[in-house]
Length: 249
Image (tube, rainbow, N blue to C red):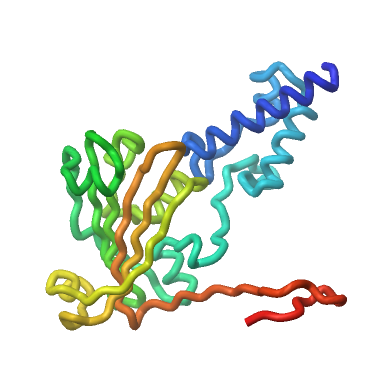
């Protein structure tokens, strides 16, 4: 194989695999075919395959496990402001025990509100509401609306046993999203669900999840204000002679 053709093939492998990961076809934890299988499929040498996998690994999209194989990697959370974690990860990071309870599940044709939140014209949707607890205390009420036209497998998941927010992250590990954070007062329904007084302060996080050009899910999570702690580290200023920042705040 000429050097020019090898370059073209390794680029094609890289692009093909990125599409499969970014589209959710290869979800978090998916075992990628072996180098031998990929080489046979693309009609190329194993060094060509190895180069493509090395580039994917450098991008943080895959990980190689000794004697186990190569797997799609779950992306690391960067800033909690930029990429809000699922409630289970939040709670466990605080050193608390996470439990959850499915409080509502409804599959239906998209209504006006569903179409607005998912930016779709028609199609089936699935709404799942889950109460998360930290050491037995209500931590947040999480409502997920899935676009079943883009994510039909959500309809088959038993969300009484599988937590919806974590399932979505594992099913679509590499995706785009928008988060909106705001405050509100608890109405009677939210107060009862979260075991807080009516009118108590809540933090609301709205999540829009996109894959490709479509929006696959919309989420709303209500947190009692006393339960939430958003923490982020940053550094500003130009590096000084020693490499340390010259200023910040």
